[in-house]
Length: 278
Image (cartoon, rainbow, N blue to C red; front, side):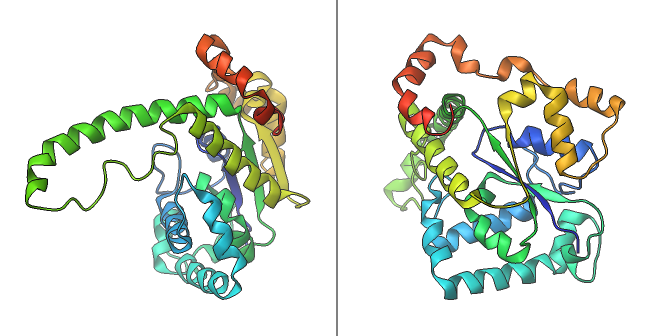
């Protein structure tokens, strides 16, 4: 059995970039990838975990209640093992294997920001998995989440107004938006701090963990990519490194500094940012 290389980190922190780097270097990150380089198979499993914990992608703290309750934890792990070894795993691997992903013989892994807070569950299945923990400045993360939320909010309101006449005789089954965690910069930054704290605590004193900053990948690509591939036990070569480096945009590192309002927000939030090394 080959233990996976799992990419974890807060949403909008550069986990997609790291997953793409690994994928292009020969690590199987899934045959069912979305545009954000997340495997649909593992997204489905993580969403199932969160639903059973009463958690949400933007409110991962509730996962601890499931993890701390041994009977529920055992049932969740048993279900996941069944799914991972089933024919459904073919969506991820692209291959029909007797024991599903447990029969993979090549270097493989997955990326999904939901995985970080759920690590105790996944480590129960693969205790020796390798974990790549990606970090990014909290204000850049908050700004990205907030910007995406505003785009989605506009679409949600338009859809809601279009269907509003129908609601006069038929009840709406869902609100305009399920939660407003990233509707403001302040709440988005609080979400960043919550998930990074959870992940940092879970990974404390753990072996087989490689921590990498999004900014270092962009500003020091040679050493950062070389260390990443070495951790994943992938042999690097000069043409490959040059190809990977060509995909990077250094201007995305600390991009908040170019916006006066975000720079002031970062200064006001310096105490919180400092707790996580920023």
